[in-house]
Image (cartoon, rainbow, N blue to C red; front, side):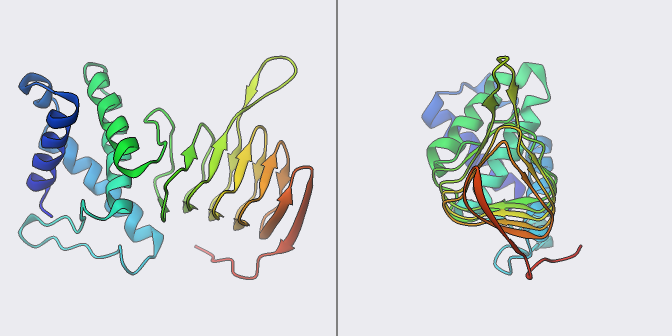
Length: 219
């Protein structure tokens, strides 16, 4: 899909759902779309998923289909984050964020800084909250990353290394430190615990089980 077509469709959705007027719609210029598309392409290529790595630059094609929920989910996150960088576009950033939430049932707030390269699959019901994310982060449906209150009232957030994959319904909360090349197995619950590099995690905090990750990929 061409950048101009992406621009037209996103603008139409914002006008139809949020009654964005023409003056506010003008804040969503094609250059902002182009930056979001570039960031999305980087994520899709970095994911290594053969279904997402096509980048056809002929005739201005972006290689992104807005009818693929993963591609559109990633694009709308980057678009809302790019709008967030400009103070006068904050209200529009809110609307793009909510558009993503409505269409893809995923919580990706623009103030949360996801890594340069990340991806997901079937992301419905996932909440990616504040954390320090490493590159090549990947999550499936029903996953949660978020903070946890300490006794002194301070909220602490996770630190997540690179090449971390969260399988369905897994959670990383609080002051957890997740190493590199880690797989969080389905339904695992990690809260305020450290996970070493090159491991597969099973179970619920504080009774986590670690096994060696033989499938680690070095990049």
